[in-house]
Image (tube, rainbow, N blue to C red; front, side, top):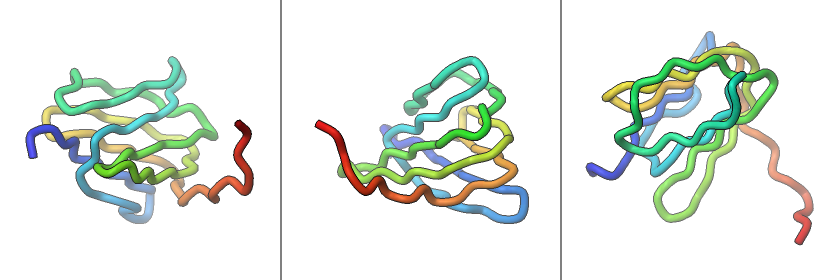
Length: 96
Protein backbone atom coordinates (compact mmCIF):
# COMPACT_ATOMS: atom_id res chain seq x y z
CA UNK A 1 0.00 0.00 0.00
CA UNK A 2 1.28 3.45 -0.87
CA UNK A 3 0.10 4.99 2.40
CA UNK A 4 2.07 2.53 4.55
CA UNK A 5 5.51 3.03 6.03
CA UNK A 6 7.94 0.10 6.12
CA UNK A 7 9.41 -0.09 9.63
CA UNK A 8 12.25 -2.17 11.06
CA UNK A 9 13.17 -2.17 14.75
CA UNK A 10 16.58 -3.78 15.13
CA UNK A 11 18.72 -4.32 18.24
CA UNK A 12 22.42 -5.19 18.19
CA UNK A 13 21.82 -8.94 18.26
CA UNK A 14 18.44 -9.38 16.53
CA UNK A 15 15.58 -7.97 14.49
CA UNK A 16 12.84 -7.08 16.97
CA UNK A 17 9.99 -6.22 14.59
CA UNK A 18 9.53 -5.56 10.89
CA UNK A 19 6.41 -4.66 8.96
CA UNK A 20 4.19 -1.93 7.58
CA UNK A 21 2.76 0.83 9.75
CA UNK A 22 0.89 4.11 9.45
CA UNK A 23 3.36 6.06 11.59
CA UNK A 24 6.38 5.77 13.85
CA UNK A 25 7.12 8.08 16.76
CA UNK A 26 10.59 8.26 18.33
CA UNK A 27 12.42 10.59 20.70
CA UNK A 28 15.76 11.83 19.42
CA UNK A 29 18.31 14.02 21.15
CA UNK A 30 16.74 16.91 19.18
CA UNK A 31 13.17 16.13 20.30
CA UNK A 32 10.27 13.84 19.43
CA UNK A 33 9.71 13.03 15.77
CA UNK A 34 6.72 11.54 13.99
CA UNK A 35 7.45 9.69 10.76
CA UNK A 36 4.77 9.24 8.09
CA UNK A 37 5.10 7.71 4.60
CA UNK A 38 7.05 10.05 2.30
CA UNK A 39 9.09 11.63 5.13
CA UNK A 40 12.31 13.36 4.09
CA UNK A 41 15.53 11.39 4.63
CA UNK A 42 16.96 11.82 8.11
CA UNK A 43 19.50 10.27 10.46
CA UNK A 44 18.93 10.97 14.16
CA UNK A 45 20.47 9.91 17.46
CA UNK A 46 17.92 8.27 19.78
CA UNK A 47 17.59 9.78 23.25
CA UNK A 48 18.32 7.23 25.92
CA UNK A 49 16.47 5.74 27.49
CA UNK A 50 13.31 6.35 25.49
CA UNK A 51 10.47 4.64 23.66
CA UNK A 52 9.64 4.04 20.02
CA UNK A 53 5.95 3.75 19.13
CA UNK A 54 4.80 2.01 15.94
CA UNK A 55 1.21 2.85 15.01
CA UNK A 56 -0.36 0.09 12.92
CA UNK A 57 -3.38 0.24 10.64
CA UNK A 58 -6.56 -0.28 12.64
CA UNK A 59 -5.35 1.63 15.69
CA UNK A 60 -3.06 -0.97 17.27
CA UNK A 61 0.21 0.39 18.67
CA UNK A 62 3.49 -1.39 19.42
CA UNK A 63 5.77 0.28 21.97
CA UNK A 64 9.42 -0.57 22.56
CA UNK A 65 11.76 0.62 25.29
CA UNK A 66 15.04 1.45 23.57
CA UNK A 67 18.52 2.26 24.78
CA UNK A 68 20.96 4.08 22.54
CA UNK A 69 21.16 3.91 18.79
CA UNK A 70 19.88 5.74 15.75
CA UNK A 71 16.80 6.27 13.60
CA UNK A 72 17.35 6.23 9.84
CA UNK A 73 14.68 7.42 7.41
CA UNK A 74 15.05 6.92 3.66
CA UNK A 75 12.94 6.24 0.58
CA UNK A 76 12.47 2.60 1.70
CA UNK A 77 11.02 3.49 5.11
CA UNK A 78 12.39 3.86 8.62
CA UNK A 79 14.87 1.74 10.56
CA UNK A 80 15.46 1.99 14.30
CA UNK A 81 18.94 0.68 15.15
CA UNK A 82 19.08 0.42 18.93
CA UNK A 83 21.62 -1.00 21.35
CA UNK A 84 18.67 -2.73 23.02
CA UNK A 85 14.94 -2.80 22.31
CA UNK A 86 12.32 -4.63 24.35
CA UNK A 87 8.51 -4.52 24.25
CA UNK A 88 7.27 -1.95 26.76
CA UNK A 89 5.13 -3.14 29.63
CA UNK A 90 1.51 -1.95 29.30
CA UNK A 91 0.44 0.74 31.74
CA UNK A 92 -1.60 -0.61 34.63
CA UNK A 93 -3.80 2.46 34.96
CA UNK A 94 -4.68 5.43 32.78
CA UNK A 95 -5.52 8.91 34.00
CA UNK A 96 -8.42 10.80 32.46
